[in-house]
Image (cartoon, rainbow, N blue to C red; front, side):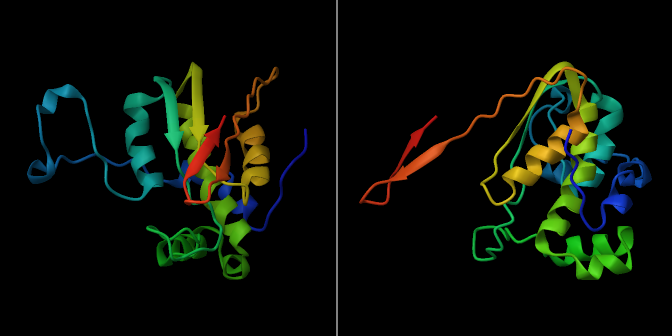
Length: 176
């Protein structure tokens, strides 16, 4: 199996273990509906949110969908797609250390994704699936990352690719 190496990998491979478990605290003014439904909206760093949810939902989730930053370097979208936010830089400085200052955007993206994928894997049931939206900028890295994090003896992976054709009126026609 091919392996993926990047600057900072050694620091983040077991980082999910260093993230403390947190207690989820209800905020009544932000809540709606019956509190007994089990529905939750969790606000905060997703690494900390995942760690807080893990004790309750480990091994119970059948489908996970994530839409991580595409890491195109584009900061002009509705959300900053460049993995270069002050929060990520601060986190990298704390976790990766001095070499975190010289990471290129792909190293930063991989450092950000790895511990989150490790935690997400712990949520899945044996028959669970993870779906990820991503463009081709990091697709190759993601495939190797998923092989490493989700590797089993007899891997079963289906890649679903969507191709878009741009029309003259700037409308998309999707092919799956």
